[in-house]
Length: 575
Image (cartoon, rainbow, N blue to C red; front, top):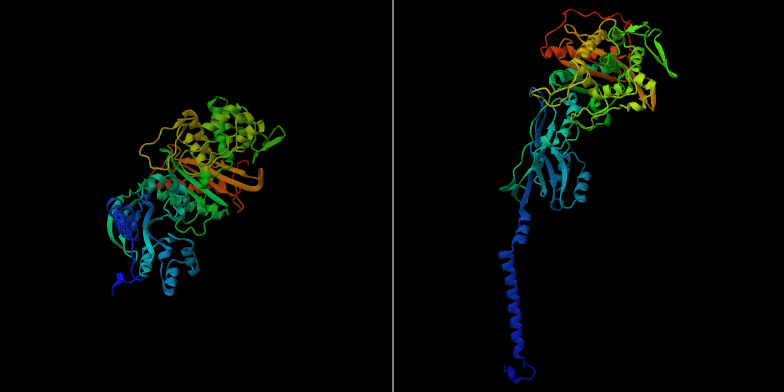
């Protein structure tokens, strides 16, 4: 057919149109070719990133947290490998049977499992820190979109015995309480990372690159002695239960080095299973809680008076009648003995005698003594929540406040502060710095009172634990013991609770060359007895005796059974 002969079929187009169309098509091809060269040759990061996102993953490599040991190398806190199960929700595919099995292994309700997957879009943890055996069984379900990371979980072999001292770590293996929190930067280390290739099931098929090496945390050696800690905890528990006390605490210090050898509290908890943990169980009462120390403070007032030449151990103090008035208030003794020597004021724990001695001293001098003994300031152990206690400025003291402060009212301290302060009497007047970590050489103490005065106070404190004193139950067969009882009404609603007491005892042994300082406190004993010499002193005796034998300390007294005074004949400190 001749198309040119038909006017209908004949089409005449300008030549420039066909050439322009050809140029446009060629230009389009050139643009596509240029873009391809740009993306695949010059700037291929975007496409490569998109491609790698389908199969390449950067995994965080957890650093192994440092081990915590006692002074002899016994493990107190160790990290065990565990797994965490996580998912990319949009990639998760499972059958009804797989869903039910996964929920059971992860100890989740099926609805809770569905909820977690629906609430997240790109990433969600389904369960953290599960045992390797459970992780293996989860992996055997072969569920797409499900992945696992290796992590570490903290384990505490000592359980409740060491709980408040060591604290614990959270899900991210970071310290939350106690030593774990205080030394987080030392124990934690630094996480690493590596790039891997995974298949569609989430299994690693190739390890391609190490991006950053993990740096494990450093091990920590504490001053604690696990043997003494177990002894202290067990005896404290017997006392708390036997006296039906609300709580209790005990501190054992090395008088030579200032190291904290044992520190226990009740109530306690199991750090390996914290599902029913309450705030009261968490508190390290010996460090974070304060109380009025009662008569345990009398030796400091007497030491100051002797150091300033106001009295001597044999100086007689007017205590006849067992009471004295200061303004509108009246101070009482628990017993009426007539006039007493200064030594007897300590031995028999006379409130009247201590108050008369205090009122003979300048208020500023008393405040300085208490301040230098560490009251009113934190012990600087680096432990979270260290209590400073309460020591009001001396300029605001009224006479009755100065008098009662001599026997531990109107001032508050922690049990650790009180134990540390007694190193003054155990070490010839020298206040020792404390350490939670094992030390190779003792730190340098601060001289608070003269060595002669400290020796005189030691003699008085020895009398306090002998028959005729307030704490014969604190004695230890084979060792000379020095110490002081304390009993104080509890502060409550801005005043003092009439029938609630804090009972305490603090002392050291052997008195001839002190090795240990031990302080004991029982909060609200309700079994009928509440004086420190009856409820706290026996704990001191049991722990001190066992500890000295464990440490191989040579006896400095005859090895013969101790006779206790007849029941009901004990001398009680004033409250």
